[in-house]
Amino acid sequence: MLPARSISKPTLASATACCVWNRFSLLPHVVIYIGERLCHTSGNGIEGGALFGELVTAYLFLAGVGAGGVAAASVADLLFVHEPFGADVVPDFAEKRPAERLVAGVLALSCGALALGAGCLAADLGRADRVLSLFLAPPVTLMNLGAWAVALLTAVAAALALARFLYVPWLRRCAMVVAETIACGLAVVVAVYAGPLLQTLSGVRLWSSPWVPALFALSAASCGCALLMAGALFVEGDGSVRKAVRSAARVDVVVIVAEAVAAAGLLAFALGSDHAGVRASATSLMHGPAALPWWAAFVACGLAAALAVEVGCLVRGHGRSRSAAKAGAKAYPTAALALAAALVLVGALGLRAAVVEAGAQRPLELQEAEAPASVPSENEEAAGLRSAPSAEKSGGEGSATEREDVTLWSN
Image (cartoon, rainbow, N blue to C red):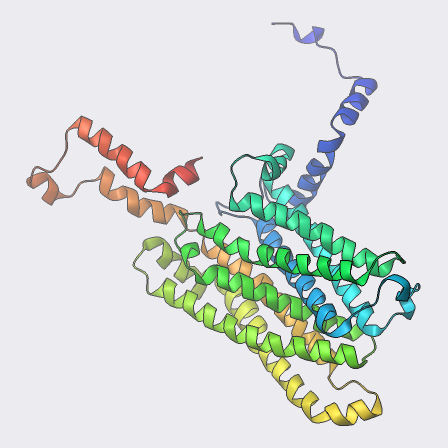
């Protein structure tokens, strides 16, 4: 071993060379450092023994908002706006119709949410090689498909937004229709895949419920409608804007009712289960750490308050639609719809935070499964059911293969 004094200190030139050599891995480490400082977490964003940290919750929320926003804006353009491209495109963005500016703003905001969510996921992974493995790992998993879907949707959303902000006379309307259709398909994948991904984590029985992916998908759709309703506050209310916003509010009312049904189904599943881990999750949702985001943010704000505001806006707007159309005014209270949109977003964040927090009951769940194998009952000893050492060894191996959660969480 060389003496300590013979080891030369790094010089400025060597440090510069290292920075240049690792230029592609420097940015992820900076993002990781900032994310850890902001969230007060360590390593991969997990604090206090929780399964997932704030970075994963933020990723689930931002990915759902971005996917819902891209889908809502694309559907609004396909059905109501029909923005012209090619020779008929308006060079100045400020001179475009209000509905066209609304769609462009929602697309830009959704693209930013997707990019920020991808940054949170990269920061939670902790290393650049883990980020690359999401795209280059040979086994095709839900995580790989989700990572590719988020990346592709971000790129398509950025292209759709730039095509509206920039003057691109050679771009045709048919190409935009194809791109918006592809964006809708990718948005569905991003909105849906998070639920089945959580279901693959067999160590958390609460996430195995089919109500979890249903809640995530419905919440993403509600967030997309919310972005359209909030965007109407910043544009003038022409006929296309009125149709798009009114349709978004109507769809969101149906989605919120479906969310309430799915939330009731998840609670019924958790409260009626005999599994120790699910019972602990139910306790967390009812009056534990997950109760505040579940009841205050999701149920009170995202479901009850948002539904009441939107129904009130639709009832009021229906009575004023004819007179407002004649006077050229807005037939809907944009400030109230923007409030409903904010409530929906708060509820979406509370839903994901509550579901993630309620799943952080791993030690209790594994303790129940391991107790019978390590401590045989007195009846078994009396009946001579205690196996020989070799049988115990083989039986232990069999139980480890049957309980995939042990292998999953120990890796």
